[in-house]
Image (cartoon, rainbow, N blue to C red; front, side, top):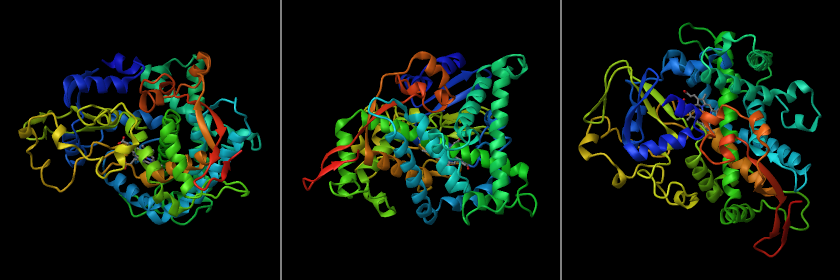
Length: 501
Ligand code: HEM
């Protein structure tokens, strides 16, 4: 089972197939671990909201060499986690999102300029470019640190800053290699092992730079950096030490850039596959006068009020996050005592409860036509909630005090996770996705390009193979989203010609 999950090209699809075959609750044995896979939305919600379960810290510790220690992302739900989470959450408030938008648009326009520098035949690895874009966004909005990773592509900045994206990718690659090759670090004579260690060290060097920059007083009031500096240690009445702050910076930087980038790349891919969806997205942008008409010299930049009017694009984004949740692996939980799941099931102490987001969002017992890209399903109300008529398990299994009552409607859509450990940065992610896609679609139409040769694919393998993008499509599971861009051409509702070239 372990080798099937690690080496099959599409483990997330595989788990979804198992759920189709064995139902919404089944048990796997992975190495020494008993893993209960739960794709029933009611039971999943019960696990994720329970105070009796926690993150299995030992499973997340594989990220420690990368993040430089235990962080909000990987720690137990303890006092330290609570104090850091409470401190940084306001950075993602609605009022701060108004501050974020100009930064997101500005950085997205830098990507538009980069894409313009190629012609129709240039193949762009959009997944990689979008990673650069999201790193620039989180650097600027979160830490007031201009990483210039997109600008670096034009050769205008120092090689040191150009490398930042490669360091993030290289570090995640190394971490995955360590999971796949137990005892990898002991092979110190191997070139790839030495290189991996070096890359991790350089990435941590970057985080140290961010920390220094923050401490030199270059922070905006209310930003992630400012709030982290003000955060109080849970166990003493003083600020976080550098040692405590370091992993938090690395985790926020990593969690904030990697996920948004993959989501945007998948969404662009999905739009490129449906002429009708593309037409509707462009038409919505056009109705908001965000396309250039003949005579006008410049495109109008997206404003905050535009976002809530992009209802079709929001539906496209939700459908993209449903089909390709960037944290496809989902959430893992463990209980130190026997855990009563629903009315009649008991999960023994120490067993791992696994809520795989890709499967919850793609199994046929939770969704109609799950394999179809149907943004329309999000245009009418309540699509994110569980459908009671589709539930597979006998009714009496659900009758527990935790599943009934509480006034919480269980969800079958959870790309940002459910429960107290849900994504703290989801407001920024949603805003970024909307603004990035709309800004790119203001200028280009994207087409899937032929796959690059195998050696190039090998070079671009990342751990997202297993955590995010490993969903089985030929191009996507390799994390290469090669695309051509074409300038948008056409006419708007008033018969005026539109061009973005
Ligand atoms: C499309 C984009 C994003 C998706 C799909 C996403 C999804 C998730 C998911 C599923 C989790 C739970 C992970 C787990 O329990 O193992 C999570 C946690 C987290 N995310 Fe995001 N995320 C996104 C963007 C962001 C952004 C922009 C930030 C911040 C800048 C961020 C910061 C975090 C942090 C710090 C946690 C840990 C929260 C905690 O445990 O209290 N994420 N995210």
